[in-house]
Length: 311
Image 1 (cartoon, rainbow, N blue to C red):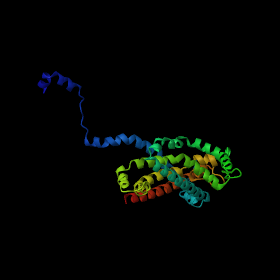
Image 2: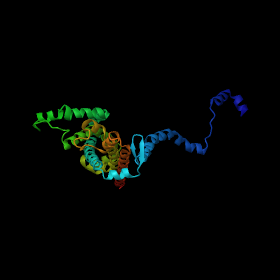
Image 3: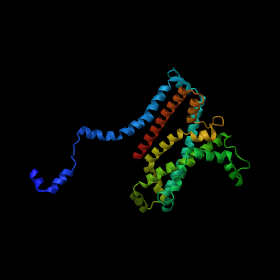
């Protein structure tokens, strides 16, 4: 080997420049991917797992500032008999399901027209603009439109729908409608982006075969595209539903839970209990119950839709 390198100086230089390769043991090769993701996993556990455990621990105490008194499950039993808790849970379901249904219909309709039409496809970025604004700024704008500036009332009066200004924040159903419209305007693009991506990812040959067989566009969408979208729809609705459950900014800025608690959702109930009544143990118990209900409903919903998607 040494004689071959001496006879070929170029080969000697190449060997000198080449780095020494070390063989990793099987254990190192298996551990290497986990080491790469370890920082992200540790970070996520730190901001999610630890606060969750701390909330469960705190829910077992009556907490008043620095005074902690162990009371076991009394906070949970008190919640089950709390009319304000059940009212906030009902408001969360009512406004959340209404907003989610409207967002789903609008997003799916826009996606059905946008994913194939070249003209609409070129202007898809316009549909994303509302999602780019800060939720607090959007809430202030809609509060100005509905109540402070009475923009919506003036428009409705000019076109002859109403005769006098509407008090959107003084009426129960108008206040709820104001929050639903605010949420729909800002977050419909979230579902729209997911649905468009899912439609564009489907096999175009299947649609082309159905079109050659004489199927109309509506038949292709309802009988082919939509059934294939069911798992994606389930995941998108669960993600948006979880976000709606934690709806807080618009309620805090626009209504403050009024009138008479008709717009107080679970998130606002937890905020009011913890930071206005300073009953942090009770607020933690409400947070734990809300988390448990959200996980159960989301898991059931996803399982059902994924099973129907496979069928």
